[in-house]
Length: 87
Image (cartoon, rainbow, N blue to C red):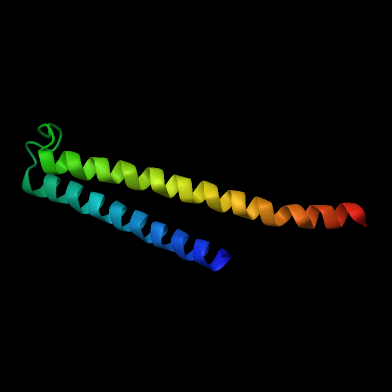
């Protein structure tokens, strides 16, 4: 089970890294190709709104998985605590 959780965590870390890179590239492209509108981007298009909603959903899912991992790790450490107490 721990290996599966670690695999999921790595997948989310890669996705997070990919999103950071995409954001950097978009900001760079906007600044270089449209310097006059870089600070005044127009309202979001329908596609941009959909992408933003998907990103929010992804972040929420990532946070839920991270919380579940913490809970699993805590559950695994409980028997160890009892062993230490009984000694």
